[in-house]
Amino acid sequence: MEGLSRINAALSTTTIWYMHAGQRLATLASHFKTARKLNQQGIHLMATEGAVPRWQRVIDEALQGDQNANVYQYATLESNSVLGGTSPRVRTVVHRAFLTPRSPAHPILLTTTDVRTSKATQLAENTHVELAWLLPKAQAQIRILGNAYIHPSPDFLLNGADSISGEEKRTIENAVAKLQSAFPAKELGGEGFDWEKERIERFDAAGGHMRASWARPVPGSRLIDPGDAKESPETLPKSDETGDKKELVATALKNFALVIIDPLEVDYVEVGVMPNRRTRFFRESAGEGGWKEEALVP
Ligand SMILES: Cc1cc2nc3c(=O)[nH]c(=O)nc-3n(C[C@H](O)[C@H](O)[C@H](O)COP(=O)(O)O)c2cc1C
Image 1 (cartoon, rainbow, N blue to C red):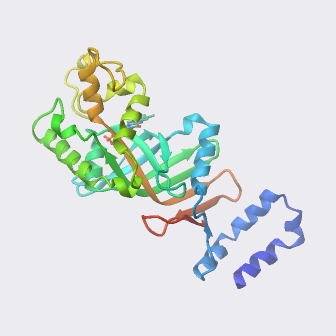
Image 2 (spheres, rainbow, N blue to C red):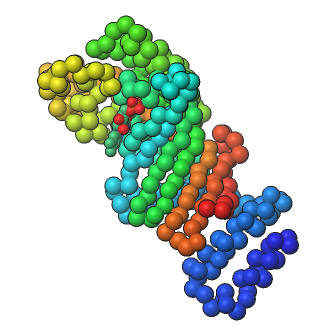
Image 3 (cartoon, protein in one colour):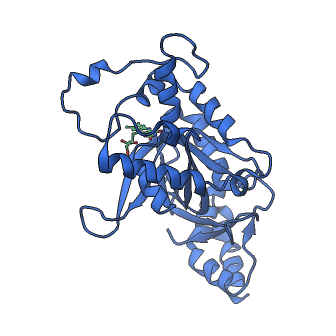
């Protein structure tokens, strides 16, 4: 309580009451250190139980103001990396949507991929991920730590990984088998959510060029003759194709997968305000339950 009285005392001095509201917030921010101590002493943290978490609202607002802000980078862990042992691997992806099949308080992030990519093999081994999302107009960074799960085609193993053989094929097929059996459908979506329907709808909602990319040879495999790239289709129709592209569409749909990121901790840094602000949002467990937040020293 002593720390709280110190903050109140500081805020009620004449100089501070003459300040612009934003500056007063900034002054409060400068007391983060004290506020953090207060938290540790048991003073309650802000809770956002039952509601859309504030960090998601920050992202939604940024996306409304800037369509180009819909990409982030996420890192997975690769065992047996060329560095020896386990190493982080990172890549840029497009944010497709927040899904809230269970509750608005429990948003999960949806992105998509080709299940033959390295990230899928890495996620089959280890679900831990962290993503970094730059929101340029807001001059903010959001980092999300959590688990990522891949929902591949249920048919993948029936048709196998095309255009490769031997060790590479076995690696992909083993990874997909693991991803298929480990996908926590109920935990992420509750009882009624139809993940396969979601996958097909996302496939159909993608552009024709994107669909064509999932019918190409395995991403990251050696391109022996650059001319071969021209052989691949440039665009493909939706999943209900019955014409001459039917087989290629079936191949693309087989390789297309949902990636679901289930956040556990969010680190929000704002450098567009002075002094800068940093907020940690967290859930106490991976299951249900609201988000809490605390101010951190930036
Ligand atoms: C702007 C941009 C957006 C991208 N979006 C995606 C995406 O949504 N999903 C995806 O799997 N790869 C996407 N990629 C490609 C990845 O960055 C990466 O090269 C590819 O997925 C292979 O990564 P991996 O070998 O780590 O699995 C995107 C690349 C760029 C430059």
